[in-house]
Image 1 (cartoon, rainbow, N blue to C red):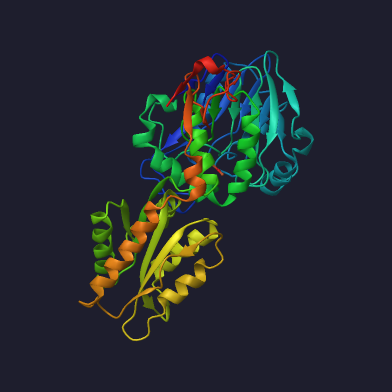
Image 2: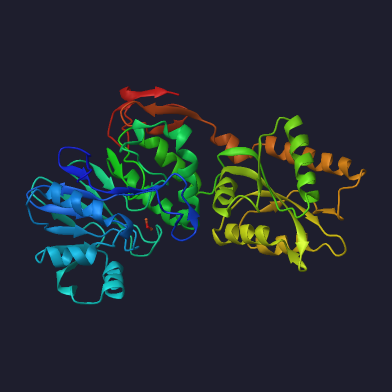
Length: 446
Ligand code: FEO
């Protein structure tokens, strides 16, 4: 039986949720499931935008055949070749012998790699700005390389002002019947999973995301249709703003994330005392035990906070395993511009501080606020004062808003139509919203 939702008059969501997947992409736990979104445009021509993962093929087929309602499929637009969106591609090409595939040049190469070259003559390679008229709708193709694979492209529907955004602006979590972000309390219930999705999957490619955001700023966008998570039709400025922040590696919170590894709880104890001293100074802190919390969650929090503390025992003359995994993950994602403090523990030859420094030293804009704090087996009575001092240094730094950030603290004006936020001392009288085109009269100061 089909299970679909209308996006608007001509577009239908024909994807599916999965709640049985233990780990997305073989590594990221998805306790609340994940959606695989696919969209069908029913115009004079029919256009399918991406397929789904192999887990949900049966539901997808039901949805597609129901929505096609006996019509043939004319085009498949492949935005992204990762198999969670292309599992059904070969079957569709066989089922619809006339169907044309539209994709980037790199995607054509990847189709050959995944499926062979039997369908090469059905592939139409798109370049930046190419268009396809499907009757009422004109589709414009927007290249988005390395967001987060090199072949990625997006589609802008010039008629309905929709951006089909591939993996960008996606989110972990099953849709549970809701399709639009405004059908849930996104900020309360989904933002953390949206950040975890972005930071882990796309986070390394901040500069490429910035390029896409620049392109988006030049388009009038009324809806964003990603390949995972919710469709955005309201408050687009909110989700675009979050991605702007994340892709510039700017923290959302001035506060401290403390990640610790601890074999017999002595390092943990020091981390807890540090958290107490920070709390007494009014500093927001979030703590993670790296032996318990998978690194995808901790990495996401590292993107969120301005100051990071890593505490770990020495292990095999290096860093304890779970902390090393976390730090290498953070380094691989190229997180920038963080203030950091390190605590090491070692009963005879503490080296974890030095080894943690080595892993982090290549990261741009990182600054260690104090010398590494060393514990020998267990925190000693006279070290509590040193920890207090470390907390004071961190607290002072957290409270010192960088000059550039302070200068940026301008007034905010929100577009009442789409949610876009304009920042500046005053809104120009002739201002037009870059997302929806609404004039200055539609803006209200936040
Ligand atoms: Fe959802 Fe990059 O695949």
